[in-house]
Length: 178
Ligand code: PRP
Ligand code: MG
Image 1: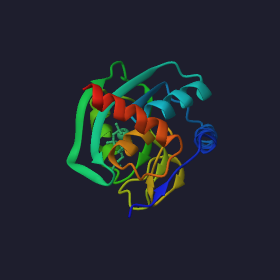
Image 2: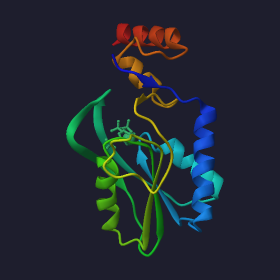
Image 3: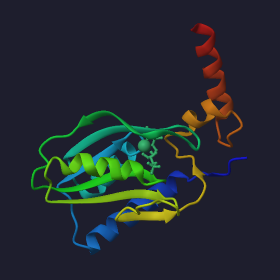
Image 4: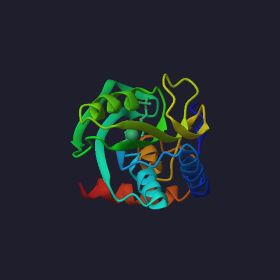
């Protein structure tokens, strides 16, 4: 049986503030934030508000088909990136598991000639082949973020999340109407 780690919103905020403090103590303030869609978009929005960075770019990558089930390699669905030349870039995602997504995105960003690229994720798995430059906590379980709980319940209705009954009702109605 899969064991889950379910961070509360409070822990997400703590993670983003801790990462921001570490970046500042390194004198690293990026010019641009690149969010890895979809899981990185809310961490990136939080980070952009903490640091006051309005310049955001996005790379849409999908690697996982379900809990612990991956494609052979990350699949790039779209790259919404421009004007990174000579810029300091922070790449943000919610978690680094194998580390492949961050590697993959790092290669894409390098083609845009930034002056510096650093990476940040809230969580990292202990087996990740490359740790991000900044992270909040090492976790060895499958993480259910507040922003992907319904995606996980769709796959496994036993997943231990709150408000599940209401979601399952919605799902039932949607399936009946389709
Ligand atoms: C998850 C997560 C990271 C990536 C980490 O994304 O949000 O982007 O996997 O895994 P890795 O370190 O093994 O590459 P996912 O592919 O599930 O897409 P999503 O963010 O759209 O849910
Ligand atoms: Mg992702």
